[in-house]
Image (cartoon, rainbow over all chains, first blue to last red; front, top):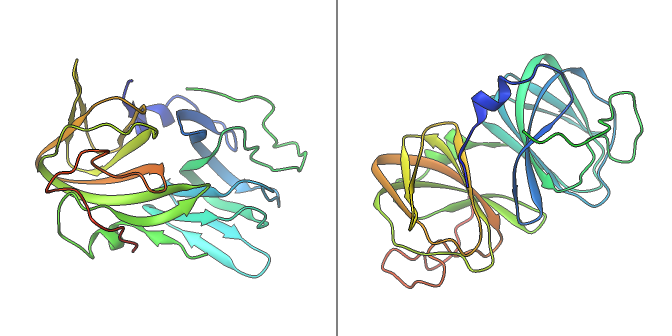
Length: 119
Length: 119
């Protein structure tokens, strides 16, 4: 049972769209990621997903609207809802989602992470 | 599906040791709380619990050690592990735990919250 300093963990990597696992509880995972540019349209059939912005501004496009998240803001995206994150400048974020959730859902894309990374 | 600004939600209340629910996903709840002083020794028999510090310094006493959490630091407390949070000065924190988790576990204390509060 060790504490985790989020900024310190964020300082250990630089690649984009490649979440790292920094905590696990009740079958859920806490992840951090750095993102920049446009991600791919996807949904998570069985998993609700939460974004919490640590630094920067993240736009999340939905089929019927766009939500803009700034530092200290969070959004829960219910399962099955298609979304596409866009970061004009680099964004640091924290994710809560069930263990095993794939970041591109069922979409196989060049950005799809091949293996889990634990920090 | 609306975004949540954590600082804005924190500004809506001042009482201590009374968590507010600001998000729900996958059977889990995201809560915020302001705490000051000593809480009661307790554990959560079936629930892992995560603390993330938004502001201030929180000490968490365990039977065999004390962990000090500063802003931007988090800790997962596994189910069944007794703990006692202590905030010398006011602390703002975010909690992540299964829906229905009682903040004093099975302990009935004057600080025990009687009803859920959603923001």
